[in-house]
Structure formats: structure tokens, C-alpha cells
Image 1 (cartoon, rainbow, N blue to C red):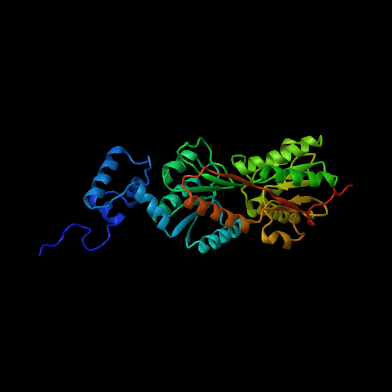
Image 2: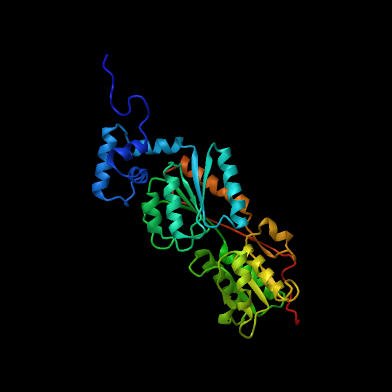
Length: 352
């Protein structure tokens, strides 16, 4: 009896089989299958011919079916060292686990280059969708070329730079950054603070731009002057924040309070203040943003904006699962309100 000698006679054809058959990488084959424009026409034609030769059938219906049956979701975060994102990831994983999915986790460390590498690697596993908290400076075109238009994407907290193609119906889950920072600034003003700095983050980050705008809005509404040296940029972590603390006091008039980009920055700033003999909550007022678990346990406890990161993770996962159930639904942009939590780190000016 004659036997079938084609490559798929006894086992399923894999991406590695296709890659070997036309002398390209598995990543290139994966890009072709996702419809990414990153692959040139000649290479695409060669890969598609090999797909036909080995009997690997791929069309939009097959892609949709594979996404529905995929057991994984890719979660790519910009700073896993930040406790906020650890809590967020926990919420994502809990919700995905309840939906029958496993989480493929990657961290970019705020590097756009690393982000592209992480996304490319995770996408080789054909996840059903991607949840992305972009690194600072992430470009919409680059992300589109890497992910393609077939894989559902949910953006969390930051927008991508550049224009997004109308063929990329990405959902967004954002925090009310501007209103949150305005609430923190208004709280300090109500305590009698007038010389208030905005500390931390980078101007290129959309979330930082929004929080800074809320701070400026509150200061202008109160008729308060903003000195140029009251805007201190630093990486959004406690180590860099502590190192940059001294910049607040290089010029006069020095601020007596700071609205910080996030809790990690606020905790780092408080450490830097202690190192200079300045006691937060008595000599200098500090507010954060996120309300990570540590915020209520710091010394003094941190006044901050509660965004409930674990709940946000669950919400992000649920939105992506909804997209998988309803792939043709209109893209959503949800802005989540935040709540001011007043604790001991905010205080009136020491001279009041």
C-alpha cells in the first residue's frame, strides 16, 4: 500500500517546518501569518509558497478560529519592577485564568527596542491577544508592524506616539491622569501650599503629560506661579527619584511640596528628603499616584490617588476577552476615575 510522503503525513506541520523549508526564521513565518507589512514581498511570496507546499492552510477564517482556541494571552509591561504593575499583572492573570487562558508575561524596562523584541518573541506563541502598557516613546507604526492587524491589542494607561491606522481597532483602558493630578494639587493648595513642584516621569510619556497638565491646571486656577525649576524629570522609579531630590533645592524659591508622577517616585523622593534632613509630612508635603500596597505603610503614609491596580488588571483582561468574543465590535476607550486618599505625607507649609 502506498504511503503519503508529504511532510505532514504523520504529524502536524509546525512553524519550524515552514521556516526550515524556505530558509527564514520562525519569527518571519509568524509575521507573514499575521499579515504584518514588515516582511518584503519576495520573502512573503516564498513563505506563502512553502505554506502551500507543506499543506499549512492559513486564511482569515482559520486565523479567527485559531485565536478563539488559543490558550494564551501576552501581557507586556513597561516596568515590572514597579509594584503597581506587579499588582496589575496579578489582576490580569486572575481574570485570564478564570477565562481558561494562561498569561505570557514580558517586561520592557521602558526600552522601545526591548519592547519590539519581547512582542516579537511572545507573538511566536500565537497568543489570542495582547495587553500592552507601552514603553516611553513607543511608536504606533512600529507596534502595528510587529503585531499586525489580526491580533487583538489592548493598550493600558499610555497612548502610542504617531498616527494609528484605521485598520488597527485597538481598545484602550486609561486612568484619569489629568483629573487625578489636579485633585492632588488642589488638596495641597487647600492646605496652604503655594510653592508646589511636579516631580518625576518624563515629558515624552503621555501619562506624564496628562498628570503634569492636571497640576498646571490647578495651579493656574488658584492664581499660583509655577517656577521652571519646579519641574523635575526623572525615571519613574524610587532610585532615580531619590537621586534627583536635590534638584528641588538648587534654586530659589525652593518648593515646599511636590505632586509626584507615581507612588514609586514619591517614595523615592521621601527617602531623598530624609537623607537631606527634611521630614516629609512635616517639613515638605508629598503626594503620589497609584496607591500601591506599600503607600499606606510608608513613613509617613503616602497621600496618593487610588487607581486599584489589581482591579485594573482584571478590567483589562475582561476587555480583551470581550474583544475575542466580539471581534467586530467598535473599539473602546475607557477612562477610569481615580480617588484621592489623604494620609500623613501631605501637610501645610512648615512656615504656616
